[in-house]
Length: 229
Image (cartoon, rainbow, N blue to C red; front, side, top):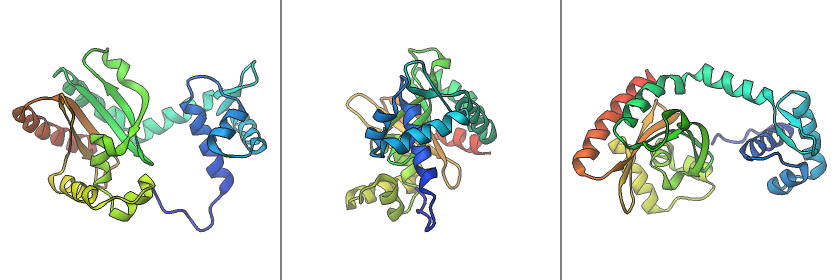
């Protein structure tokens, strides 16, 4: 997370917070609920929602609740087209998916990983798109791979808590080896950062042997380099 500017625009910060909270809701939400969730005055949230509706980023339903508007979809499409990340990554995600493992592409957002793509072999490949899953970064191979690209003081800003010595040691090891590994009861999840500095990471999980682990580390490194260009 970047350092807060000295002359911040609180209205902009609150407006984006309202829009993101609304975007994460599966159903339309009222201004009251959004205000309670975000800890903001209800009057302020309602004014923000009306302004966002004017811009087409939200719309008011017949039940007087708010949902994401067409302008939000346009903004999402424009941002994905401009970055080109998902377009470049999809061919490699598809190749990884053919191995029968779960594959993912994610970015770091505050103390969470947001998955731009997340799919297992049990689902149709297209089902992995646009799922917007959020998962604690410290428990995710993608999250750890991206946190390892930050300085210790920036990790505290990103996660909202001061990392202990063991975590810093773990992060330094991930940085040194160039990949993150998370061991669960049944399998291993691996992730490799994309870009310098890292702005995303690609991952595969469902690995059970040392030989498979070494194979996918090499593959993920190659794919990450190709995606970053």
